[in-house]
Image (tube, rainbow, N blue to C red):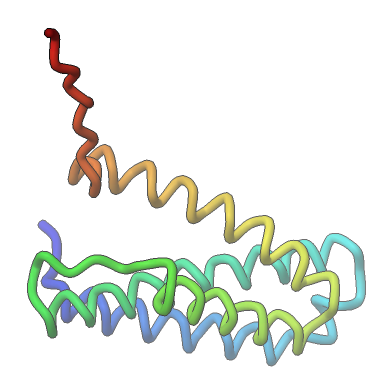
Length: 130
């Protein structure tokens, strides 16, 4: 059984703080190797996902069930936050964070469309016959 939107938002926010702390504590070890910098970018993309989940769920609990996260400001804000945290570890972490985050965002959108339906409904253009 799932939890409420407010609880999910608080759990996601707590995990986001935990990821930031882990990235800062182990930044020397992450930046030491090439594989570590890729892993740092992956951690940054997970930070992006959890921040987006936290912001979106807290907005849903505040504004109602019909509220949806948009590209600006929610996705842009969480992406910039994840990139900033990744930049404090290593420059390559920024690039890999962008790549992993865009992949995660694609799959999040795909799962959301499968579960909740498309946000926009397309209507066919009807032509009049004379």
